[in-house]
Structure formats: structure tokens, C-alpha cells
Amino acid sequence: MGLIKELVLLPVAPLRFTVWVGDKLAEEVDRQHNSPAATVRELEEIEQARARGELDAEEAAQRESEALDRQLSGPGADEEGADRG
Figure 1 (cartoon, helix red, strand yellow):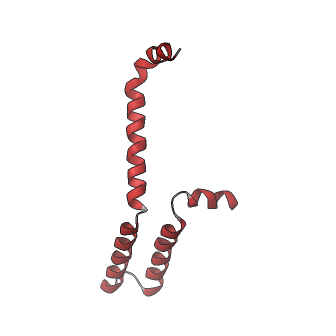
Figure 2 (spheres, helix red, strand yellow):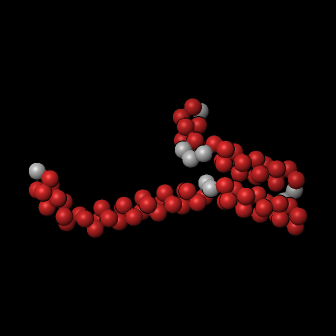
Figure 3 (cartoon, helix red, strand yellow):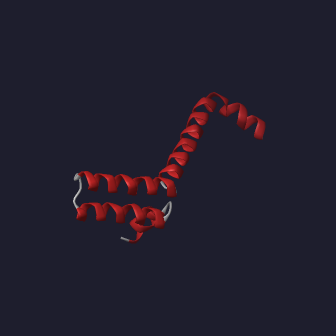
């Protein structure tokens, strides 16, 4: 049965491969975006913007808090929080 299924699905193999590659890219982007290094980089950018006067102290503190919350909550926490609200 598996061989027949594979033969029937052969014409859509390029599409299945494209979807697989897209999923892998999305996973990698998510992994890099939620990494501790990305959070540190974001905090440094916020501090630099505050030093240049582009952000006031309140807005910088809010952005820092958001970045730290994202890091502490981990991947998938946004979806869980949306279900509760």
C-alpha cells in the first residue's frame, strides 16, 4: 500500500518539498529570534537608542520589559496566553 501511495503522490513531491523547506526555515528563524543572544542584542540596541535620545526612559523600559518577557516565556507561550484571554 505504501508504494502505491508514493506513486500517486509523486506529482506533488516538489510541493511537499517546498512546504518542508518552508517549515524548516520558519523553525530556524523562530529559534534565532528567541535565542538569548538575540535578546541581549535587542537590549543593547534599546540602550543605544536611549543614549542617542531616540527613546525616552519610559519607552525604553517598556521595550526592555517586552524583550525579557518574550525570552522568559519561551516559544509557544504567546499562543497559550491568547487561549486564556
